[in-house]
Length: 427
Image 1: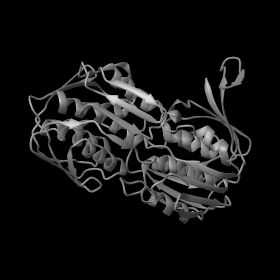
Image 2: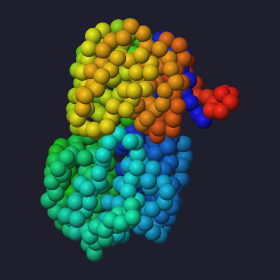
Image 3: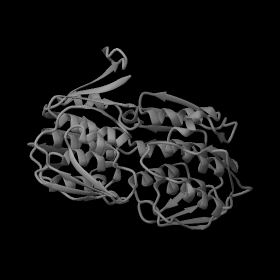
């Protein structure tokens, strides 16, 4: 079984370039279902989740071709609206196929989606929105089916600014009759990127990036070219890694405006963060100050950076308090960090992180994607060797993490270990 092995205590120096955003490219790939002709998507990272959603498109008849970091997708030959392959249950983003299928073909059937076990993420907001647009919803035996003679624009208020529901309803409304107004929607940069892609195909979407989006339906959309935005969470992860390990690292290919809350908290912790024309430079002596963090929907501090910052704050000289308001089960990494000497106590949605004299290497397990990133950061700080199991979660969201960290001086590698004999080989 593959594991990441880290010899801690190495300072980081050099450059790391950020890939296209996972959370932007997945809905954009789903949106290609709406278009006649081929769409070309550029800066697509090599991720397990990208492979999964591409496999799902192929399973319903789409033609998907990969050329390095470019995807060429033609959905003219889609021959079924039932995306019920085994892949559909592997990740949350699989459900994003329902909106486009319903918009273009008038029906769709999906398995209930899976993904990281970070708490309840129901699809009821998606379904309520589809129903408001005129779809009939049927749930049975772990699957959801939707049918509509035609979708008609409506005014839809989201009880919570769900990113997935915002994306799914934007796509469904893009070919609905009349205008749809979506209120209390998510404002993330990935929403804006999807809206730009839809508009490039001929859709009429306005207001993306605010809490109210207007979509005027059109009868037809056509394939287009699109470059995916850089991944702000990948960038934030490497910023935190450089701050934790110490050294000087330039993070290239970033949109600085997308990283304001992360930059603010790193500076508050005593890290030097310099904004440059070609990226963000992180300078750290590894001596950190405690900070308090409260996760919030964008433009607040991202929940997807909570675990990484918790690992970083193990080194801070004092007490830090982290409040998680987005997901109710996102402290599973705490027990793993404790194996490395962390002094962290949790109560409800709050974690208190106390400074410890030593962080030591241990055998730990990535319980979800961002928890895995947090363990990597902890391993970079630790004395001795850290071995991370279940790295399949990390591969869902980071393209070439080991190679990128190695390039700036980290002693990190992937090994194939036989759990019975203990035999090891470099993977």
